Every structure is written in structure tokens, then in C-alpha cells.
Amino acid sequence: NAGVTQTPKFRILKIGQSMTLQCTQDMNHNYMYWYRQDPGMGLKLIYYSVGAGITDKGEVPNGYNVSRSTTEDFPLRLELAAPSQTSVYFCASSPRSSASGANVLTFGAGSRLTVL
Amino acid sequence: AQSVSQHNHHVILSEAASLELGCNYSYGGTVNLFWYVQYPGQHLQLLLKYFSGDPLVKGIKGFEAEFIKSKFSFNLRKPSVQWSDTAEYFCAVNGPETDKLIFGTGTRLQVFP
Image 1 (cartoon, rainbow over the protein chains, first blue to last red):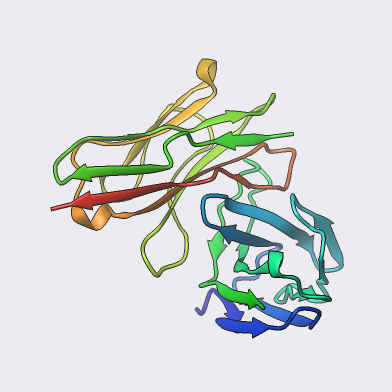
Image 2: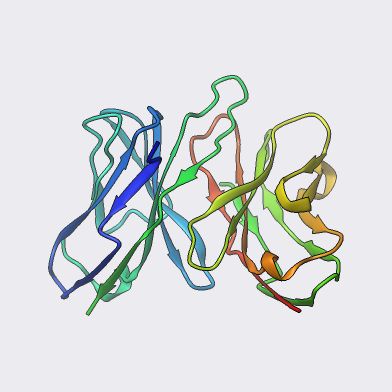
């Protein structure tokens, strides 16, 4: 199994450009997440989804949009790129145990985005 | 709102030294607790987790963590570190009634031979 696949791995954007980070998982997980990782800041949750057609904001959603039309895909869109969005972005998925409520995430390899 | 604090930002140890990384959380209800590790150039992977039961949990590579409810803590320990343990370690928490998994700021561990 491929697990969680993110594309692209690296991207440089100019201020004001838009782009979409792709995320696909082949584990039939209902839950999917987008985090950004900045030095000394840990991981901050941007958006998450508990199933196809359902998305919700995380800790830092401003400047981003998501959609979840299928179970497998959870793209993250930046509409007007800003230098503050320079970061490493991680997509993750989870089967989420309804019994325990526990959330064990499988992460993708990350997408490094630079906005100049 | 739930939050996670990791007070050790950067830890430097020699091989065979003992390790303890602090993790405190703020959350009023029942919690699920995790430690994830990110080795250089790799993505995050689960080190260990606590859902319920025995508060002392054991993970991969000789790591363990103890959940102390009264202290809202979930500290990570290893009796004798190796050079290959050099990595960044993240504590994370979620409650069963919330779908969000919240991470701490991470602790960078460097182990020298």
C-alpha cells in the first residue's frame, strides 16, 4: 500500500499566486487532516475532514480552503499565496476508532512550499 | 480548548544517557495521548500511544511514557539513548469527543556518540 501520498514535494510560488496541494490515501480512512510545520512551532492543524463532503476548520485555517469529494482525496488550496504561508505541509489520515475515540494518524512525506 | 506544552525545546545528550521529555496538556475530559517522532528527512511516525488502562505505556525502540492524570502529564522516557534516536519528538492529545489532534511544539533531540 502507498499509504498517504502528497504532491508536489517542493514548490516555489510568487506572492498572490494560487496552487493546490494534493493528498491521496489508499487505506479507506474516513478522517483526513492538513497540518503545517514551522520551526519551533510544532504542527498546527489547518483543516480536517471526517468523511466525504464534510470539512471543518482547525487552528490556522485563514488563507486556505479544502474540499473532500471522495474518501481518498483531500486537496488543500492556497488562493492568494503570502510569505507567511511558507512552510512544510503534512497531510495525514486516520481510521478513527469509534470505540476508543483514539486518533492514530498516518502521515504523508510532506510538501515544502516557499512563497517569495 | 485543548493545548499541549513541551517545555524542552532542544535536548543534547551523549549516547547511553537517560532521556526524559516533558509533555503537559490542558483538557478537561478523558484524553488520548500520543508521542510521534520525526527522524531527519522523514515524515512523522507514531512512537507510542495511551488510550486507557495501564498508565505506563511502551512503544517502539525502547521508549516508554507515563500518563499521570493528576499532573496532566505524559512524559517520554528512555533509559539509554542511541545516536539513532536523534530526531524531533512531538507530543499530541485529543479527547474522544473531538476530532482534532493537537500537537505540541516539539523537542529536538541530538545524541552524540
